[in-house]
Image 1 (cartoon, one colour):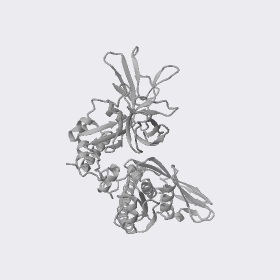
Image 2 (cartoon, chains in turn yellow, blue; image 1 turned 90 degrees about the vertical axis):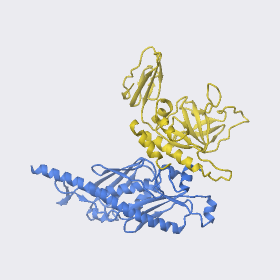
Image 3 (tube, chains in turn blue, yellow; image 1 turned 45 degrees about the vertical axis):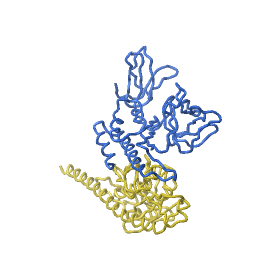
Length: 252
Length: 275
């Protein structure tokens, strides 16, 4: 169910269910009242057993505020003591990725990341008064779980936050299904609006640091896929096919 | 190495444009000297306002032109200043109503709403379109005081624009290492017009040229970065001149279209009056 909502209006909350708050919903710590704090489309989803209700407001915002357990794509910016400084969004404060935030990391066996390298990580500490922390470990298993360094052969581009949300969580969205008709790809979606994508082998170099001749084609496919996804933010569902065609038309 | 550089080396760009292809700007003209110009995601709001004041003491027969911008960027404001005020694009002497006593102040306010590369070019383009469209109210001097007329009482006066400066920012990329570029005559920098945000972040150097359709170079600045062959610079000036001619024509078309629209409105008002 979706409807328009403005800050301060009352939310259609059910009684006697667990309520999960998403972006745009806020619980007043004193009165325990739940109110919307941003204007946009309201999503209220209740699970089949009627025990849990999810509430969030979909807005077209650009600024990313880290929340616990968000998946993010960050770029390493430098080191600070025992951690890497990672930028999640240009112009925002850096977040910290501890050397220990990798699976199997010990004091001696520390990861080796260079400036400019990208990582896929989870927000593990979101108290905004102190430095926000991310880590590359799946908390349930203690293993890699898909997090870690994103290699340099891929391409990073930016989309709006709500679109990244849609791509990551809406399993019925058809954007990737359509894209897979054109090429095979590997993707990491960060809720901070950064997306890392690689089609085929991406950008690959040989031992003499020369670009492999085959990789230029893969790079073109990667960029076309990125342009298609970027374009999908602004079009309706009926135009997706056309957008896909336009993005890939210069490639055989 | 990044995707951008590999693409540029192969003569292509990530945004699908050719190396020397410009974005097509969109101009949204409002009333009372308001104008929004956008190209890609770059978006600039420009407001021109005027008031009556006293000329500066050392320049009694010149009006006053003030250009403000809301971001504190020295390079931007200096190049805009050089291109528009110092090139005398706006005839300041025509702004004087009474020598040493009364003149018009023209204030240009730039509000940068969004940044996607190439602010300088689009600021200057937007300012010039806006200046060409701007109208001062008509006036009379009655008994040592000024009487201003409403738009419907007496036709307003256009500003006198002497020439239209067009600005181009060219970004340079070094296809090999810096040492090679310094030592060798065979390594040529790749030049690229109208860079977007990411291309600006990656460029090794850039050059800003302002020129007009009379083939006069108004200013040329290249602030640091990798050295560029002088023959290359001359070639680029030649390309810029061709582009400036096209751009001037485009500006004139935009202005003409807008003026037709307003004259239609005036005619309609007149028709209503007659009835």
